[in-house]
Image 1 (cartoon, helix red, strand yellow):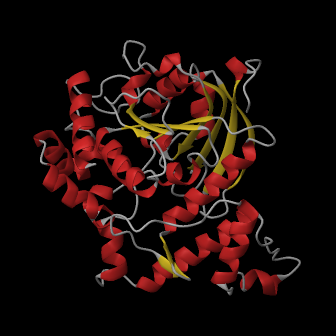
Image 2 (tube, rainbow, N blue to C red; image 1 turned 90 degrees about the vertical axis):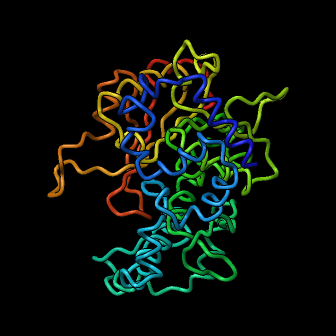
Length: 360
């Protein structure tokens, strides 16, 4: 597996030696990309072809700095386990997200402080084992997390669930509901993190999953997904197969028409964004949304914060503003994302493909 990951990285480097100029790239070189700064050690080892060192980093990835900006990582690990903070804070945050997930999927009601203030103030006083069973019954997807990368979280029964997987599971439930009575279609995700959502939905809530991301993230996703879902066919960049894989992981520049992998020749039913668009320069996000409108003929599901009008606003655009500027995506629904305070779940329609016959 590690040899495959190294080979995929080096194939990307050969295809695009100058860096990530162009679509969805904030900076001008692989090494200078701000997001990749914490992943520099992994990139060095991938470039050197040092499979032993790459494997050692990935086997403990959730406790290392390379996960900064993706999930967990050294800072959160230190706060929970090494005395850098009060672990009860993490436990309370986890429980709040867990109850929010239950509310999101309909496993419990959302208490109204005006009608029942006692229930509202006691919302976190719950039996987590019973609530897990109700969540699974409501959604029909297994809420679990594999023992990979020395992940950490809170224990429910025999499971250890990281807080971030509660967000991914809620997104998976929303995504599955978007299909309605239609058969699940093909999903394209931008900025797939460590592969948490893909592991939940591939071959369960989508027919085919393709993720596009930066090189360090592609390597992390490949390791996690190949370990978490050995039942699936997973294709990395530079690999070939006679049949369409269940999961494919590609660099973002495959959206460019001149790329031999050209995603322009494919069609997807649903685009998923979890934070990624707001982590780019606004002008790059708009360019990306325009490019994606040509390959995603259905809807965009976005799970992102919205700081507009808040005291901590730093002038960041909203997803809606980016979508409007692109000229292609029209918002059709918006609601609070209950597992994560300050986040919104929004659905956009690709107005250029309203009559495309998409299943979504």
